[in-house]
Length: 204
Image (cartoon, rainbow, N blue to C red):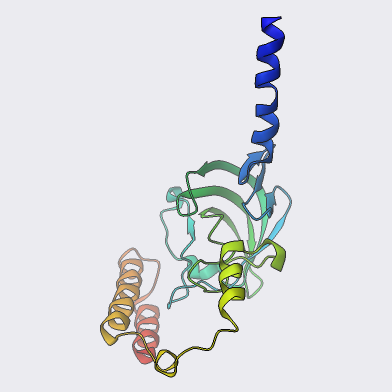
């Protein structure tokens, strides 16, 4: 009788755990919004959300020793393997994806990337998502904020408000530093480094 009692207490637990999102089951990742990433899927990457075109929530696996994620802008990735699920909150999660990327100009490359699978769908800062997904799977929290505020009339002073100049300069300096690191590592030629740096300075 005691055994039956304990079985009844414990039996609902696995069912509850299965419904919890996000989760990783049978080589398939389910995000909090229900979007799935699995072997054989084609992921459509958008533009990198940083000023220089780098991805904020997608990076190459450390084994590759490279940081030039801007190469993956507007590419598609055929997923060959999904592994190494980690989750301890929206900003502390990752999934590792290995596959074949078809770049914007048609060339292909094997990739091994790690992504923040919650933020990559649609950034909490309001930036466009770094991966293109159907609207129903986009970050629900962000969409709720947009729906709540889009009809509110903003004060005229707020409409005219711009980011402080020192913040802009800091962001540009940080992007130039990243470019310089790539140049020193041999991932960029001097001409490519100077061209990218000029673009950033021209935007300032």
